Image 1 (cartoon, one colour):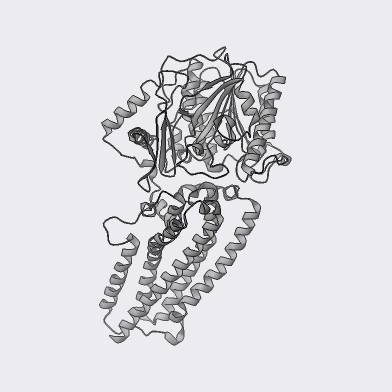
Image 2 (cartoon, one colour):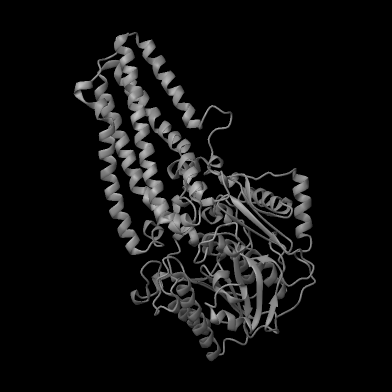
Length: 619
């Protein structure tokens, strides 16, 4: 009996030491994360950061318990038949391999967080696996080199720390003999220890198991994210991988139907202002990477885009438009399909659903626009862009493979000056009316562009470069007599945090430019103040061409006085709702309002209807 109790004590001691090991490991990661995101840390009170570190222990211990369940079973079962030292050695090897892999990847999470403002999770996994080089394309080379060095150092320190903490349990001098009591009691001991580990796995003895909401204790998202263990969060996101069938429910369905019906009752009204000289102009859609209000003077930002400013005087400028979300893949869906996107996953990665969406390009093809070209200077395989573009039905798709090596940037692909030049060539050789779509990329992180530095901030500088390419493109359009009968639609794919990397609770992060310009317009120097979104382009454009937009359920005509003006955007399991008198930002994970200026019912009804609609797609 005495020997058996010693076995149990040695096992419990080993678990305590490994718990200390994991706590130290994740504490080091949090310090690295804070260092990599010093701009956010400076703006966060120290007390909140400290509380975030403390609250993170519950997630660290939960992950330790997950990983230790196997170790407990392994150690005790092996201990039934042999001495415990071999069992501890096997467990150490497993722990060493898993922990080394984790500490190598953790600094990468800190780097990604500095760009995305959130932890890496399973929704990003397919993108990275399919294109690992593109997954790191946002990271500047010096940062990548530093990451590799830090990862190697951490891996070495990890092994040394594990060895130091567990030496006493694997040392021959402290070996423990097999248990002498009946094996039934050994199995009972396994069950008891395993059962005790369930408590930290669940985050305590309460009824509700541990979830991401436990990390949300303040109005500071950065402090909340410090508390949230990124490895635990990744595992948790795997369990949420079936979010394609998730629906949000905030109210009875009939109430959601009523509220949504009132919001969208006149979205497709026949009463709208005609703005075209004829109903079959050429159409060129320019989706501008990361252009946000920060770089548009007319939207309260810096004067970084003089050509956008100039073109707005030659067309219709919408100054109250919001991006549908925070990633390019979601922006593509919003722009090309007039369809909103859900917070927890990107529909673009599920072709079985996107193929059920209406596409602006398809509706144009059915109405005389047989010549259609899509141009993107990067790799369309990134984040499943290719599936969406293919489903849209473009007859010519031009990607990085169609440009010489001299046109390529360091990371993403051909610079915008080359893709705009290629667009000119396409326009000159196409039979009219044509529909062309270009997606720029030079203003994507890490913001490296082939232009002498004009702005100290790299983001501003890259946007300025793309704006200059746009200006050169329009000049060539006019010289080649392609201006007079062409409508240009210019809008950002998503917003940006700007130089100060503001959070999701700030309107400025999602506010973007929308501009209609070109000789095909019969009006100019006009500003529209109606609140809207990228998804409204479909229902605004098609009626101008005499084409019904009824299939675009969530899109509304921004040129109609009858519509209810609102915008809805989402971020990682949260949403924002904006109309002329209300502004709501709600975090579904933390179950808290980041902003609450008005009635939350509208935003909730929209998200509930969106999730119901999206869940049914492709079935």
